[in-house]
Image (cartoon, rainbow, N blue to C red; front, side):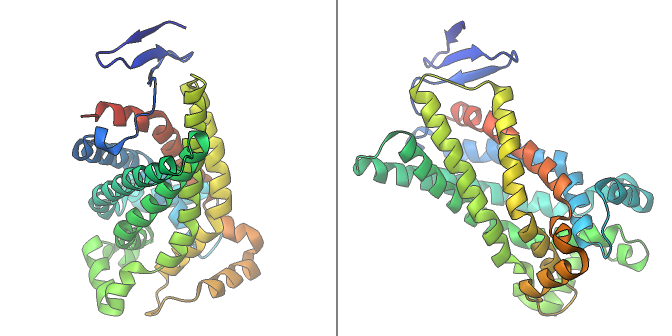
Length: 318
């Protein structure tokens, strides 16, 4: 396959899909080589754009999880359209955009910083290759999720309440502004109200983030060592498949998180109590409410990240 070099000696080749990808002769993960402020700006803008594109899927998922009766994706979307029109699919996007930039900046900073730290420790211990890459990337994914969720959870709590209230019609819809929700949470629960469901959120997302980045780092290192670079279509397919399993494992916890965050009581109800009630009324299907829109959103995110994140890092080198 023909290749050509850029000004820095990085090989550029075209995949069978006709799209160019960068294929460096070695690793390009050293934190010292990155223009971190530029990466934070570009990466955060990239993730914010993805959030905007996939936001309607998040709204549908949340409404399915919070509904008093079980409904399918099309039914939930149709009901929202009848009540609120196109605006309903973007209800609560303000807090998301407000929190997305700092949350993604925290994610990228923790990801690259933690990865560089553990890569250095692995090299000092004489551990190299895919094993070291998988371990350092796994630790990086863990740290990245912890950092981003700590920043983003208050925005998530507010957003989900706006999502549900805005599509309810009547007085609830009239009180669906983010400002009203913030005042209501503060008056009833104080600061802790903005972190409802934080524990179950970490339980759901920390293992997934760690495993996803560990698998990605190990595969990338192995491919680099063999002078291989998978086709972008293959990478996207792999990301979709990985997202399927990740969402399948974490969906019950995501449903419980949503129910806890949206509970009207002053004190958050116990997660196990909510889980038992869902199992009793709907069986295991109740723990997988919103599976399809959540998987669709996760697949788009994963495919975009695995295809474009390394390219973003290269254009942000010093």
